[in-house]
Image 1 (cartoon, rainbow, N blue to C red):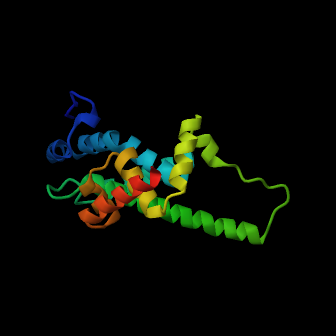
Image 2: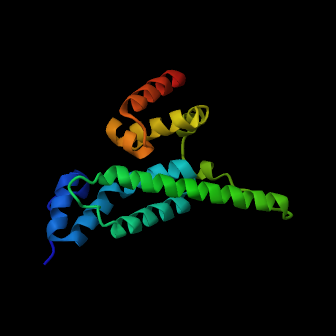
Length: 181
């Protein structure tokens, strides 16, 4: 017999999902996926700027989550772990894409045009202006702003995802905000 959630998965706390896992791991995993898939997709999309690749990264993140034995342990920080795995997968994908681009550049093919994926990603002038503004920032500042305001991670979660101290998170956010203004 499976437990049917009475409310939207986004409203479930991580602790409630962990408690559900003690009774039914499959239901807990479904709740976890429903709760975080959109946030992880947006995060991957920001890094990769390709919807299909971002979708693949989110799928792979959850495949790894299913295999992670510690996922529902009381002290395990699921959200930070998910974001860290997704980020690392994205960075690996970017690295692989850059390698392929270097190979293609060394062996050019006639009439090959590269699509501008970022144009497909956002609609509207405001989104384009925001992306241009973020692109002018350093990688550290851009990443921390996206994690805080786009992915809505807490300072502590950002510190875990980036593997930096809480004070560093606060100072980078402050400097990033100043550079935008």
